[in-house]
Image (cartoon, rainbow, N blue to C red; front, side, top):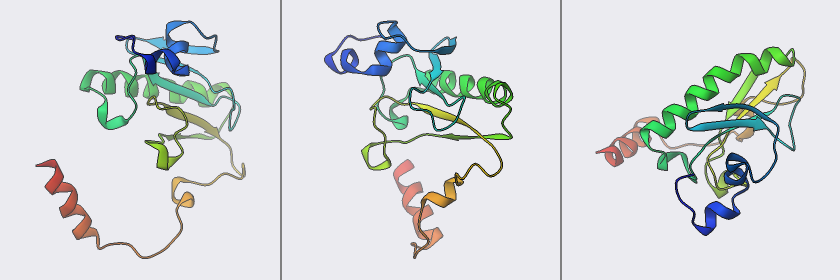
Amino acid sequence: MTGSNRQEMSCIFCRIVSGDVKAELVAREPGATAFLDVSPLADGHVLVVPDDHVARVEDLGEEAAAALFRTVTRLAGPVRAAVGAAGTTIGVNNGDATGQTVPHVHVHIVPRREGDGASSVHGIFPAGPRRPVAEVGEAIRARLA
């Protein structure tokens, strides 16, 4: 943690990173920490967090993002193998509207098995009309400029 503002001090993930709160750590890498979720969706459900307090993915610096996703890629296979899973679902809830309950970026690595009853990412959104793809693409490119 680079700062010591009130938000960081009340953030459970910052407190885990600093060692103030006990967690079942599975990896500590430069810039990122990984630990088991206390409310797992499946055995082996791991959270990977940047060591510095950042609420949204788009606010991560380049080095923090690299450290975070380097740790995710390093852990995905070992997490799957450790619990005998067939695969993993890897995801990020980014902001209140997505169900992000802790405002500190965190990547979920959730081991999956055939017939586990969970859906793919496509299963969480209802089918329905959408804006034309080209229109949406243009809007995104305009904001990148």
